[in-house]
Image 1 (tube, rainbow over the protein chains, first blue to last red):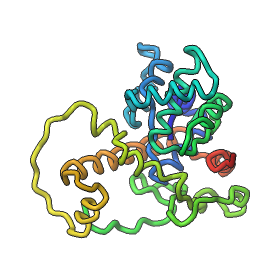
Image 2 (image 1 turned 90 degrees about the vertical axis):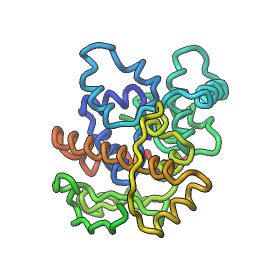
Image 3 (image 1 turned 180 degrees about the vertical axis):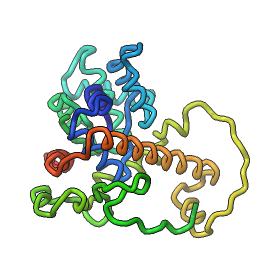
Length: 130
Length: 147
């Protein structure tokens, strides 16, 4: 299970019942919960406002952007006909999920994640709205 | 490490002892009848049976994505431990020709990551309560959505 920026904030704020349900199911089923490092750039402020997110991040697995993940993300953007910087982190999120063998992405941006996920071959990735 | 796990009482969290959803995975089925969830009682009684959709953990390990296991090379400590032979045989089989120490190291990282996730879920539920059956239904419907 991969968190995008809104997914991470939903977990950090703990104001989403659906986010709690996703984490509980992941925990019970032994599914690892991953946060691509690029999401931190989008999510964090770099100051004291990050305290809550930092607490949560201690309990999750932050995944670095490796060369294969970065290249996979570029390919997903191309195949989904997305250009520019805006969809880059979404593409990294989906590429990270694909590298982990698929699963779900906890996100508020279901449409873009689904469009990218549909371009990932050989894996099943589903967006779950938070 | 290899001692048989004690059977946990149903619906109780192993750490807190609080009532928790008994949602869990098995390898028997890959589909879940989401529509039937409310009929199957309280969320504490719901058992999720899932296969491939929940199998990312092993693939993650195999693909070496366990960042904790590969981030910087930590200092090593040589320890002597005794494990059950069938367990050692299975680990050797699962990890092919890899060094046994590296394989067990990686498995322990994965186990610790899962333990931390359990702590996070406990903390979130203590703060805001467990998710409702309806929330589980919404989430699982999307998790297992076709197309």
